Image 1 (cartoon, one colour):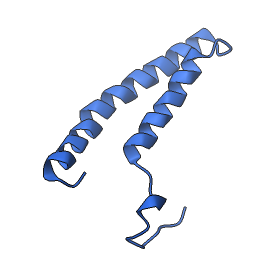
Image 2 (image 1 turned 30 degrees about the vertical axis):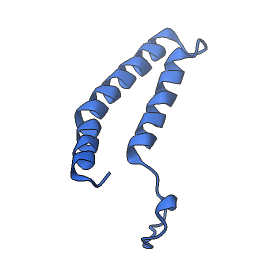
Image 3 (image 1 turned 135 degrees about the vertical axis):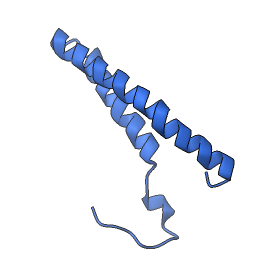
Length: 72
């Protein structure tokens, strides 16, 4: 993936946080799929839970700081 150096092309970038949440939604969908073996479903739930914990501890704090500083 190439890098874009044009400041006016902000629409070409995506939100890291939204991408992270979309990834976790896909992980949760794997856990909900009845075709997936039970132990695999439990693994996906553990991954989802761990990722969500990390998201709130790291990303939400960063987003709050951005909002308070007026950069969000």
